[in-house]
Amino acid sequence: MSIWYRNGQWGEGEIALPVDDVGVFQGVIAVERLRTYSGRWFRLDDHLDRLRQSTSLLSIDAAQGIDGLSASMADLLHRNGAPLVTGGTVLITPGTLRGRTPTVIAHLTPLDLARIERLQKEGELLVLSSVVQPSANSVPRRVKHRSRLHYYLAAQQVRRVDPAATAVLIDDDGSVTETASANILLVQDGSIYSAPPDRVLPGVSLGVVRQLANEAGIPWIEQPLQASMFDRADEILLTGTGAGIWFGNNRKGPVYRQLSEAFHASTASFD
Image (cartoon, rainbow, N blue to C red):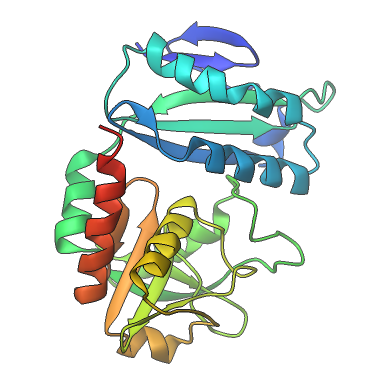
């Protein structure tokens, strides 16, 4: 059985939130999904920094709990037998309706390694949905949260078109934003186009890929990704924690190959 962490305590087996926790009652949950390479958390500090930002924007006073997570995440691996490759989840809620002491939970999440390999070799089928991201004035795009209703609705819509497809959400101007689990990059004439940072989640893997692109001298342009750009892009790249970098709609090319090799080299340095 998996061992988990909750507010400074350790437990084994199932973990649950009470029904009066605000995370259950109102869906207010800040979350981070992580993974390891060679038994070490990848970019843990970046994930914790984003978690601090998310909880701050959600007015959850969890700074003290987050400060102790670096050591707790290392302990989490140790207590679970130090797996070389695994996923992990950290979630924070405001606590119960009456107590309002934040709940901080960390647990391991198995990785679907077969799916990851398939994404990197065969890519992912993407279909634009008509579901619009919630306004950034209401729900800041910088928050990584568990309120997934819009992603759920987009997925249901796209499955009626192709059950194997992944939904892409749009912005209120019709531009492309992201999927439920990945940032999207478009490649045209050797340049990478990325949505403006205030329109999408600041992905940790996205940041890594941008750094690698800069080191390789690949131009990086931030602008709204219109649907017409999505349709005619030379390459469609996706970035996310689980698979790192992969491609969409069978459109991969030299930029993907170069960045994929560089990304895998950066994770191999964990050995």
